[in-house]
Image (cartoon, rainbow over all chains, first blue to last red; front, side, top):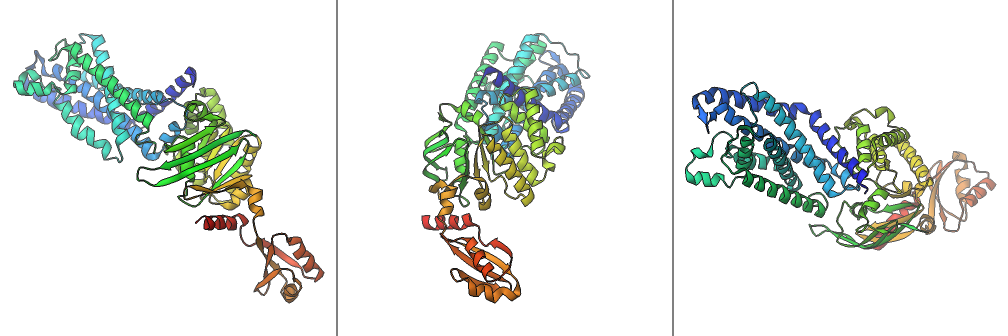
Length: 257
Length: 307
């Protein structure tokens, strides 16, 4: 397949993905915005006033980066898992599989689609946060890089979930029982400095902890983790997951029989 | 003649140990209109799945237009158009978007994709429905949409897996005309169908697959030549019935009711001879029909003998 053909195929997949979540914006863009707005009101505003400072910042300022990151993670993941699984379920994935689109173009197309939704929701949440906190971005390059890498990682994770899923239950199990606890325990609402040493060590095993804290560093210039170490972890995850997804596609796991 | 498809010793055993294909070999010539027939579960869809790379084969080789599928996957896919048995497009998308998106997967620029989409949606009678959601289409329209989608990149080989299943007679005939014209323009077509009349009308060559093996692979003409006898039902005037049964000496004749007789014409015999004898006897035939589909009888014979 020529480079130009691959580019057109890639654009087609991305446009299709963006069109899909835009068409059902009431299901895809509005609910996370409402949920995060409620977090801002309840945790940030009502509870936050009593909490006072966290990690040297007003509690509202402290949770804003974590909540943005949470929305990006959840939406990147759920976009790819629901889109790819729906196509598998309806067998419309066969449209792609019979075509000459290389596996890496298919994968990259779905990942960019997931990133688009994750970042769109992230942008909405960021705009909402402006009503509640005075946001300054200390390190814009780090902020943008970490959010892009995180959305890549969770889009890829969503892809793997979709490949192995056999029912709609299977695509909700991981977000409910794995992703949500990891996000909540990843330092979105608190600084791990507050935890006893044992739980600090346990938190260090949670990859989301690094993502949230690096993103927070980008915003506030303060973090519980070493930023370089965090980028290294993110990079390794992204590469390993991308290779894993390509391997699954190449072997037709869950899609070819 | 060059081959469009060459399959050698193709086997497929699914994870549940079901052996769908047991080392089949098959060749389809370029420009052919080829029928792949067989009962449910015989291995037709698995064969198509392997050719179109939707099913991983267990053993064997597949070549499309002389190119090994494994070594030339992209070129092979460019040459292939597949119309599956089940509806497999997104039911929430618009008709036109489904076809244009498929064109995009083949690297067609947007303007050309739109042009091709318009062309095939018009030819297949879906032009008025192009902006509708695909779920609103009737069963026959959905099948035509899958044909338009498979043709948008103008493949040299079109594989249709039961394209007219559940389609009414009028629509089926219009689809036949469309496929005949497509084949006339040079597209090789492989068709699986349960309507044996369809295969007889459209296809020049035929393979019958049963229980994962090819039990017959020949030209339609040679296959039909194997027919030992054909049974015709003739309607005559009530008053002529006794004469009709008396004068048809060279044929097996059975009276069905007071106006109809059943005449068996054996291989080498001619229906013209029946009419000639009836005319000499002064019997007027008001109508005639073939009692059984010729291919259907052969199909059953082949499957029975393969068992």
